Amino acid sequence: MRAQNEGLDRAMQGIRVIYFRPYGWVPALRLELTAACANSLQRLSILLEGIQRQIFSPAVTEPYPLFLADRMVKSLGAGVAAVEQAVAQHVAGNGDDIEMTMLCLQNYRTEGGRT
Image 1 (cartoon, rainbow, N blue to C red):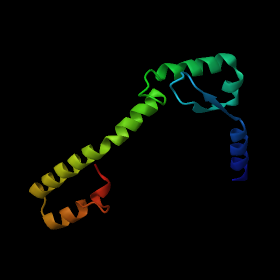
Image 2 (cartoon, rainbow, N blue to C red):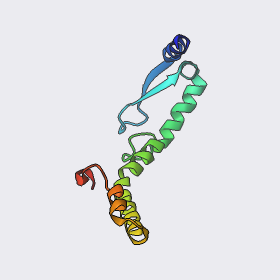
Image 3 (cartoon, rainbow, N blue to C red):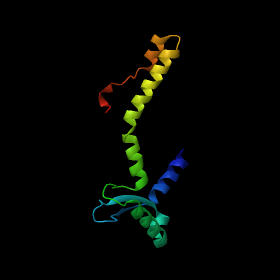
Image 4 (cartoon, helix red, strand yellow):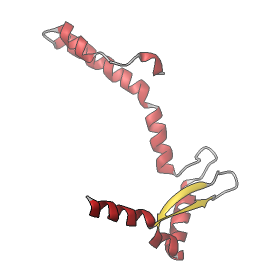
């Protein structure tokens, strides 16, 4: 355990933080890099160019894969509700003990947070 902690400490000491603002309309992005990447001009320029290419519109204020993931997660609410409804209808039509099945399918959280 001690050796793992020391290894983690060494790895954390190798992290470099830079801020990069690819365009004037983009807020500065905080990037955490390995020391090898931060100390090599060639690696750093490739990295920064790749990030700059992912930010192509004022609507995208973060690297594109993160933007897509964020959009997908925000849209899950409606899809989950539809899947829950479909499962409940299927089980109600095909289940033996409908009361117990519906009790097990109930969400233990309130519905107020969904949109």
